[in-house]
Image (cartoon, rainbow over all chains, first blue to last red; front, side, top):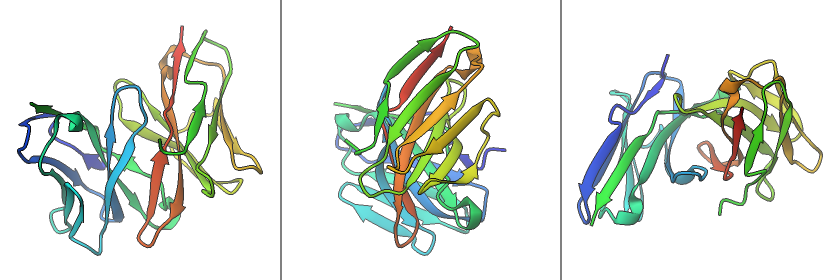
Length: 114
Length: 114
């Protein structure tokens, strides 16, 4: 049962354009969502997060949008740069006894072409 | 650099053996999480410790165990190793925030069981 899904295994974008990475979830108890970036042979690097009480959070070139009714979140990167090429994971956590435990999607490989 | 350290970076061992992976959290973080990333699966939550106490368990095998010491570093013990245990093992540490916990990951230990 995959509670967090990233349906696009890969995305290719031209430098300077917008990258949009998508994530869907099924567990309505999730109330905190995070995006991580991962290079090969390195640990995931935290990018940006959003609480379920918000629908948008922005940090520099990165914006995360949350649509709770659709159980969908997206990460927008504008403008995209070649250094953004990496695997992007969305993750979610719920409160209660699951507090802090992250459930990850399978990842999307982003390639930004110069 | 996330501030989370893991040793060793690489580990090659044989089936049936036992290994210990070590993690030092960021200064001040009380929580340590362990995750496994194998080729055919994404990041899977194994176990969570908070200030020396086990808080939550995921799909952690009985052959695996962990502990968190008074200085807050953590060790993940893997015993009776099988070929399928070959994977990347990450630890993360976190501190609670206003909306949820943001986890910061170490560089990982790559385990190869031959």
